Picture 1 (spheres, helix red, strand yellow):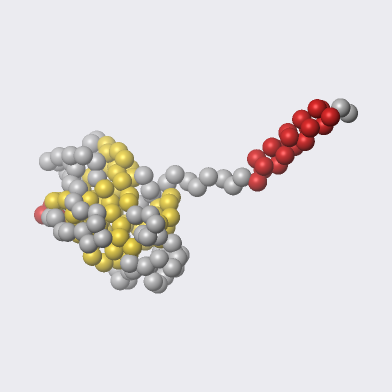
Picture 2 (picture 1 turned 90 degrees about the vertical axis):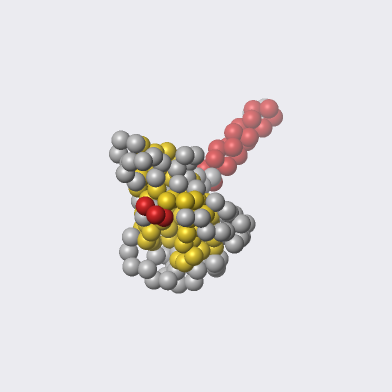
Length: 159
C-alpha cells in the first residue's frame, strides 16, 4: 500500500473513532443550574391564546449538587406579567418542604431583586440543601391580556 493511501485510511479511521466517542447532546428541554457561574432563568418562549397554555425553554431545571441559595427567575414574553392581584405566580404543585422561598414577582434580576406586584419576572430562592434528586412539579400562571390566565406546568429538581 502506498504512503498516501495508508495515511488517508489512518485519518478516516481516527475520525470515525472520534465520532463514536462523542456523547449525545443534552436535551434542549432540560438544563442544569448552579446559580454561581450561571444564572437560573426559565423563559417563556411561546403562548397559545386558544388553549391558554405556553411553553418554556427549560421544561426541567436541575439544580447542581452542592450549590445553595440559588436565585431562579421565570421570564415572560413582552406584553405579559405576573399579576399577584389576579393570583399569578410560580407555585409548587405538591406540599412545600421548605426548599424554596423568597417567591415574588419582580422586574429586577440582581442578587437582591425587589418585589413588584405586577412584574415581568418571578423569583424563587432555592435552598437546595435536602431531598437530592427530588423533582418538584410546579405551575406558572400569568396574564398577557384581559382574558383567563395562561398556565405552564414544568418541573425543578434538587441536585
